[in-house]
Image 1: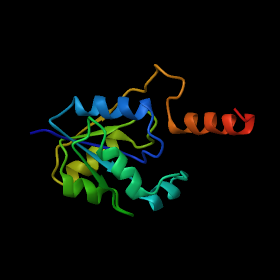
Image 2: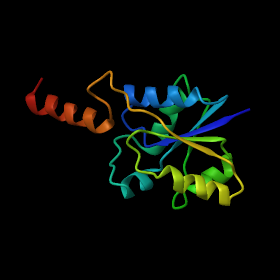
Image 3: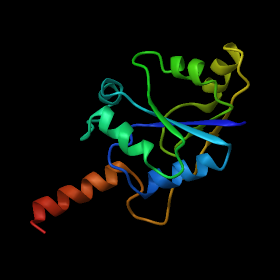
Image 4: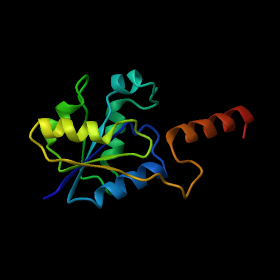
Length: 143
């Protein structure tokens, strides 16, 4: 069985998230999605609208997802140690370096493949930032 691990904040679910998770699922038999903790999201400059438990509950209901878990605070590789994924997928806009992740996994005795998933170009709302911007435009425009 090939276990794939995808990660993210997953605050406002949009087509880019669905693309990321659908493409990730194609790489294995089981897709485990790690939802970032509120504290981790905030530390990385995000201000989630939904709390971590709500985000995890929403993600766990998405069709490609076999299991959703909350990430660990502080050491992101603790979750990797626990899940022991065969593949880790990165979203097109995630700032992680694939080679750094590969090396760290190898140091833990894992031969994990790291794959960057392409962006979703079929919508002008490619990411949560685009959705937030549009929501603000609608609110400010009164439409």
